[in-house]
Image (cartoon, rainbow, N blue to C red):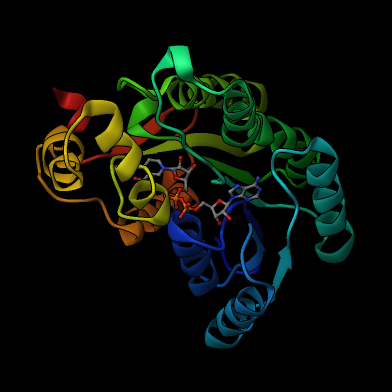
Length: 260
Ligand code: NAD
């Protein structure tokens, strides 16, 4: 099902996106990597994925906060690889701060990268998927698409928006063989989570150890961090034939967090 398909994974130079790109390459997809980082490290990563899995892998550094760059990347994929069959909207950033002090520029950046970029990639990918009569769109949302936490106003707003976008587009493309779903991870120990620990400690007036134990893992009844591999496997499942009737919904992979 995934073999030979063209998969774009935004924000795949690190963390969850990288795990998903690995999973898709392992299943035989041609992969388009995207995200920031050291150029030599990204090239090494690209070459390793291509060699290990025997698939085509290209890298495009389009900035997901910029619609013009997103459009350029999507056109490039169309020209070089024939169009996007599997689209994983994963790029995301976070900022933790009380709402009255929340920097306006951070709000704008989070909305652009965590929400609007998915609108742009989707609008540009859907025509090809409809022509082909097959497509998979997986939006990496968050448990914060379902419930809120304090001091994350922009992120919670953006992720709730991703779920709305997921449902609306799923209805539009339902008859075209295209499914649109969201994956809602709980806490995964990636650079995104590691970097918010000091700010959360400051905002709540507690130590960083207490943040891990009393804030992050306190939210998850399993008391375990979710792994990158678990998110990648869920994404691969949504790309499979077995998931062809799953659309316009989400799969929560959050250790029971939203059952509270
Ligand atoms: P990460 O910081 O490890 O990776 C983020 C990726 O996005 C990197 O490749 C980075 O270069 C890229 N990126 C950031 N800004 C970009 C931009 N403007 N343009 C293009 N790429 C950009 O983070 P992660 O934890 O792997 O997060 C991935 C996704 O999973 C995010 O959408 C995040 O909200 C979501 N998520 C993460 C967790 C978690 O606990 N880590 C939980 C729920 C949801």
